[in-house]
Image 1 (cartoon, protein in one colour):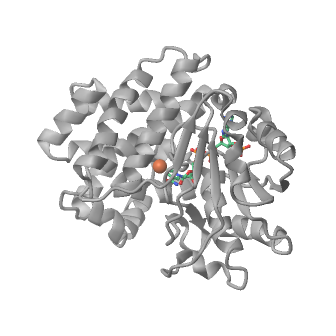
Image 2: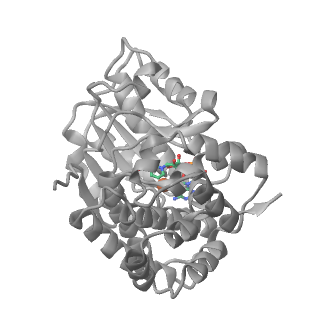
Length: 362
Ligand code: NAP
Ligand code: FE
């Protein structure tokens, strides 16, 4: 059995300035990778700029990372920085900018190569990455994954390279600007990581330890009464639950609900957490009785139906056509990694069952 999380994590109020020495470890030129609005809104970008200026680290900013970033979006950032290659990359934002920062760090470290390296299995260097999360779901700050949209295949997939950030700097106050819907969607993604890691052929006693604590933290988050006005303790619990869930999938990967979510997000622009949450109760419903009961008990639910009702209160319900279901089933049956992670036998009829229990047919 082994377990590897090489990312050093700090979780604190005023985390960036408290741990500013982290930024001077990798050189004198940084690239900040972020989305167009939220990092300006919640102060995370300003906090990083202040520290970099104080440390006399030159930096440029790429602030055009889109939700569910595509390979083309990564190339935009890479092309803008090819002549002045940075020493390290700082990702600020939700999972989209954090995942993007890993792919950009890979491509900038291999300047003579094209985007084909993203999905090519070979050992390649990458620039160091510092990850600063501002949502509470993906755990990307502690995972090696970078999930990109591939327009040619009309879906999303993780790149072939495992790139753990060197540091994760978590400040729960960056959640202050997040809407209640964003918190609920990303909290549901974290639940997906916990359930899909626990119910997984690659789970071990060590990875399950992260899930077990994660389930208890998720249960605490589930008791939050006002997602529009979170206390510091609530924000911290949301962030820690997300990071623990990230540590669990860093070891196991995810399984069917994530595999089923990607075409849903591609075709309907459904946010990641909502797309994953759609399938969770049914995925759990098909799992081994002992594991299922354990998870339900830790989360504080007496059945998959009541957990499913709660998840739908958070994320709503998705409507798709039977044509799309059949198309997605055919795609998933070819997704060897997601199928291999599922501990029960998966065939087309089980997948059809999960869809029928989870969505409304248009
Ligand atoms: P996201 O796509 O990064 O961001 C969603 C939206 O929330 C964006 O409009 C963003 O604005 C905004 N936002 C972010 N932080 C905010 C804040 N504090 N206050 C207000 N608005 C804020 O959302 P996400 O759910 O965190 O990430 C989803 C992505 O992560 C997907 O691509 C998914 O596949 C990936 N993912 C990765 C892993 C992994 O292990 N690497 C695991 C699960 C999911 P801006 O655009 O202005 O920033
Ligand atoms: Fe996820």
